[in-house]
Length: 318
Picture 1: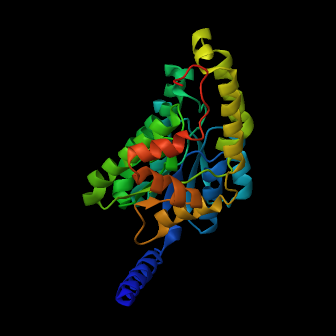
Picture 2 (picture 1 turned 135 degrees about the vertical axis):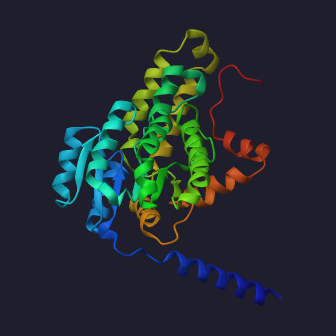
Picture 3 (picture 1 turned 45 degrees about the vertical axis):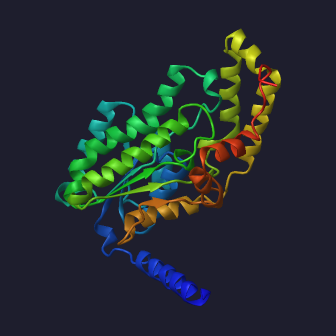
């Protein structure tokens, strides 16, 4: 009874693997623009694609980041200064790229730049805290995409947006999860709008990986700053014990970050170079075995499971 089903599933998986194994030819003719190349995923992806022979246009926030990258890459790789929260900077980078790619257009746009702090209970944050994250992770990616879109359509190319498993499941307060939920929605709408232009859109949804965005000292500093500036009434409601438990939770969570960052880089590369790229990639076992399954559970069940590890405020129902 089960044998035909197992054979069918096995053949389906084999077909899926075979279909996804086809890689494009003439990669050396294709231009790719990547944001956030000073360090982390963007830095590593730029070097990896450069080694594959692709023409990489790497956008960095700082001169130092650009210099470090150029030391590690071939002469093909070119860099440009870009602050994705500044529309003039984005427009200037688009004009720079237009002059370089010419009639070839832009094969790949990777919206990689992002920030992760502060992450804390929503009640500890201000509108400015939210806006800082949204401006980079969501609005900045939108601005870059719209400015580069004519070049992508010309090449019938690809857009690869870095989201997060936290774009499927909101596990922490602050602007990070809303920004990544927004990236998911933006990507879905772009994929449908651009389908008839031959443009494909892929979303990368990694779990926690050891990059600068998850540096413990940055998160602890940000949380400490928020706590020290809270109104006294909110502090009393939560209590010092809640704060300490929250710090411990953040510390323990970041300590479990996956060091195998190339899982993410390889997914990005596949989205750019495969004949049939996936719509969504979920690198990391935590993403596949925890975050994604949890996001499909009934709300009452996912709330119960996620709230078990949260600290209890000083003022709460008993």
